[in-house]
Image 1 (cartoon, rainbow, N blue to C red):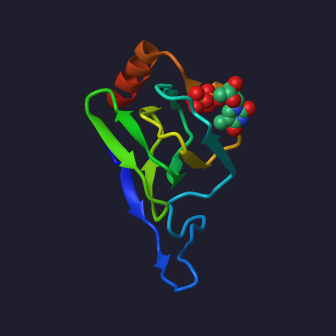
Image 2 (cartoon, rainbow, N blue to C red):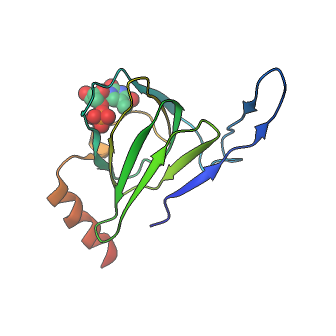
Length: 136
Ligand code: TYD
């Protein structure tokens, strides 16, 4: 489904390690927006939706959580628990974030400014739009 983990450069240093993310260098898009998800109560699910055009890069800055992806035919789960890698998620993928640990801090880098019209929040509508994409 073209979603993939991208390892970030890790500059090891006895003073503490450093990782870097630059638009169109480590990640395949230009960053227009960043947002954080944190203080997620146990058992809560975030982000059960798809984006029509936005692509994103999801990192766990602290703690852990799972990202569930579904392209309408294939499903994959990625466990996020380190800050030196992230998950690249293409557009038109249904994605949910679950199983947040108590101290989880999630950073999302997005290719677009916020636009509610870009969201597909209904799973049946997502399947329908995905199918028409496939059939071109
Ligand atoms: P949403 O993306 O639906 O969160 P999640 O999918 O993780 O449950 O966003 C929740 C609310 O926050 C929604 O009312 C829109 C608002 N929001 C913004 O105003 N700007 C943003 O950049 C984001 C991501 C959300």
